[in-house]
Each structure stands twice: as structure tokens, then as C-alpha cells.
Amino acid sequence: MYDAQWRDYAPYVSPCDPCPPIRVKWYIVPPNQYITYQPMNLPQYSLDEALCRGTLWPALYSPYPSRRSAKGGKADG
Image (cartoon, helix red, strand yellow):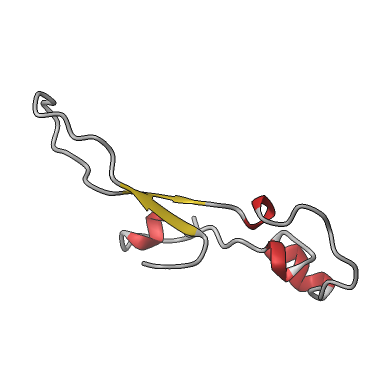
């Protein structure tokens, strides 16, 4: 699972922790963290597609994967 928006880190694992350790944790960095101002003439989605994706500009689109669909369950419902 690698995408340019995903980052990972290794949290500290204590030898005294009673829970099984999580060696790697993942998080998403939204694209708006890297765009400091809105440049002119950015490409735009059509209005129908923008409503489905939640943004008008492809540069600011960040997919939100469902944990349910990753585990094999129903994605909608």
C-alpha cells in the first residue's frame, strides 16, 4: 500500500506493554498541506465528477479508502 499521500512511522514499543505491539502506523497527509496558495488556471473536474469527489480541483483530491472494504466487508451500507 503505497501512495504519495500515505506516510508511515514506527512508534515506540515498550517491553512492559501488555498489548501486542503495532510496529508500523500509517496516516494520510492531505494535499492541501502542500499547496500554499491557489495557482491560476488549475485544471477542474466536471461539475458532476466534482460533486462525487468532493473537490473541484484534481490537485486537491484525496481518496478516502474505507476500512470496511479493505477487510472484505461491504463498502456501502
